[in-house]
Image 1 (spheres, one colour):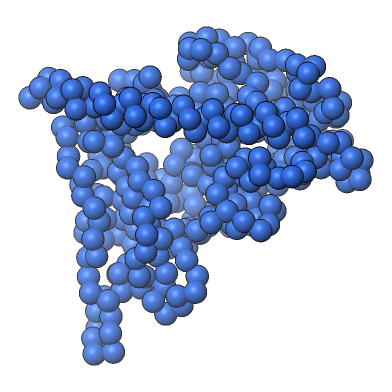
Image 2 (cartoon, rainbow, N blue to C red; image 1 turned 135 degrees about the vertical axis):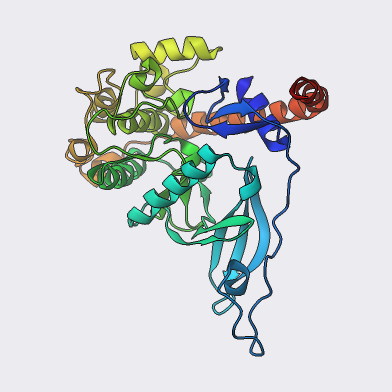
Length: 375
């Protein structure tokens, strides 16, 4: 329940995300208690430039015209916007309210910006520019109109192993690029695999580099972060780790792409972490009988508990399954996988909706208690 409580309290301003020491951990972030801050909807901070006023400073609102809200987080909202001089292309703008950021949060945001500015790859979401203004930061990124990759897959009338392999190849190429720049993503999961459009599956991009970090030497990272079902054993063990933690996460994603469900599932987070630390998973015959031996072999190399023995992104690109003939893999139907994947997606969304409703009913009483303690 920490996931729902943390996210809901953060949204209302009772807790805030931090790095390092923490009070409790949810599926994605660490939180600490704070005095509640009122939610501030970011408004235009300046008047758009006109022919009569060409001396207006270059600000977000002089360059872009705001559109609809796309999403909302604890410290930010995401809106659509278009350039005033070229209104045909839309962008996704992350608007971060400065007054709601702790010193640690602001540094984490600057780290994320620094990482994104280093990256220029066809399959990694692109940061175009950043506006640092008195009340807000504006991060201008690509607008991923196609939504989540997994949502697209479950809509397919036909799904085969070649399509799964092609997705994995793109992910390995993207991570190989990041890792050669000594950048670890640290939060790879299906929700962060987005599509540019509804027409082309190959316009896939990795998004959300909020936990990304430079790892100039092997095993120099220490922060326990990520999402429980996808986090590597070494991260859970609390030992120093490196970019190989991302390869474990890709192993989980590859397993889901081919089987339709996660390799590690338990009722409690404690039990889930025990499974992950042991690498305790299996290929259930009823779901994996039509999946090739090569695909299962690569998953085993990815879900290797010892990071020193785990396959790297560059090695994965030379794996026999990745290099397998297209026609051979296209003949391997994964219809049952798509069915299981649909159940997985529906369960995930239903669980999120139910928990959100429960939290809405409980939040005022919980918030009152926390606020009372803080005062």
